[in-house]
Length: 262
Image (cartoon, rainbow, N blue to C red; front, side, top):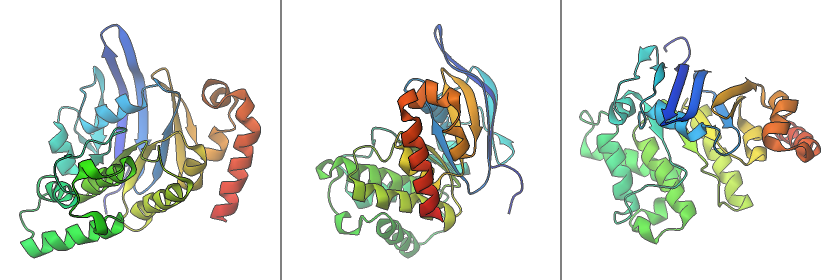
């Protein structure tokens, strides 16, 4: 197994015309950890994902994956290295079936040349079962609910055999029961498959239940980072993101998540 962090973002800056979306952002992500990336809307979270995944080119700084500078690589090249992502608004192939969407990830998101047809279909079945999509495998994605489309997006990302998975608000729109299942799935990806996860989410209770660390962005800069319970108790985070009235609720959620994990 490789040593050292899986991802390093070094002093990354991104401008959109006269607007600075990211300014000298540093980020170190350890292998197999679940990192919660939080902050107000417009703080630069999705922009940072776009830079890491190669959808946007930074104006300054660099991105290193497993010690390799991938700052100038295209998205598909980074995908082949092991970086996969989902989008806040799912982007599956709507006129394709669930199975076809996942097979695209299997064939083009990884080095599948050494796999036989039987092995590809075996991997397809495994991913469908993992995501709870087996019964929907032949349905067109356009006929699925928003929640199921999100799971198809996660499944397609999983098909590329990622080492690092960037999740962008995959829980929005889910019922309480669906939330619990989704959180358990994310935990399984980390604990069973060793996948490193960076997770943008606003549902704090879910983040607190499984994240190893939080990083907080504010107006394109890193405000703070650290153990989740300490971060959400930070006065700066409460004032800038959670709101002063959220202090007691946050303390209650921290105690609840600690009890659940204990």
